[in-house]
Image (cartoon, rainbow, N blue to C red):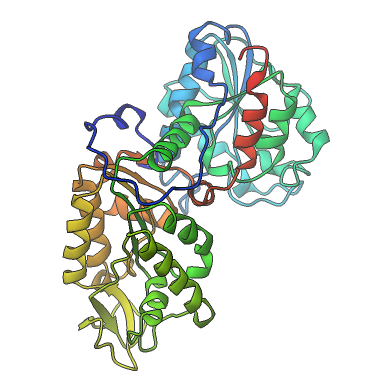
Length: 429
């Protein structure tokens, strides 16, 4: 389950907002033309609609779709276009093919098979589609892996123009690719007669905007992962906005070391100790908090069968590796999450792939799911944890994006969203 639940975004009643701690950076609302509005007003009937979806799904050893969550997430937009009487074309990338060098594993054929089953109709796959697509109103065709075209990743203008000539309305419903300027996400939106946001993309952008622009307080961010360097800008941005910042995973070791605590042989980034201290200082100056682990689970080697040892955070031995947080930390964090008004979550807080070091992430996941706050989660490892513990129905919005989620969290402008904003004054606006 890797899609937002638009119907559940407002399912919980409003909480009383706590006083704001400082002024967060301005985050103006993203104003885009919505395909749902065009369809509702009959403006898609008889039109050629090209949907850029995110159908990049894992395949098993037999080449079949192993997880159809992203396909299911794309169904509302596709069905909306069909019910609106449009001639529907859908395209997506799959994997990391070499442009102009197709291989059997790069084909969307398995996706066409499974997506057709979900739609309850045959879904033809068209391999050569830049020179034209024969599709009638009420029909649908899947266009082969768009990243096979030379110039796709470079956002080649000539390629984008060829794609744009295929449609009357371009619909971007692929939030997971919104941070990339590519021909099928950015360039085509510049040249299509109408460019708009699909319901999945609109729901994800709206949910994250709600979580950060005017959140119910306290606003809590949970950020896990291996290295501070990979999420430094996100942490710095959140430090200026949140009321509580929970840092877990390997990156917590750098914060522990920066606080003078022993971390043994754990992964640490010495050159970012000052940055970690600055983040803690920014939070403290605003009256916000960063509750570091008070106990941890360690091992003497990084392996699934390594015995776990429970240690106070002040008592990590010189030959030990911190691989998870302990039960006291989990209780401390759960108490804070229970009081939150909004929670944004990206990343596990331990090596949850190893059973002996999964308890911290499981406890955190459950605490977020049980919180009365508005909750939003994103990132591949985060989604894996949610799926593992069966918590998807209890998370308000689950983002399909990894890099896009982080960059929007950081406050950066995403190319595919920016161009939709630019085009929002088009003929149907």
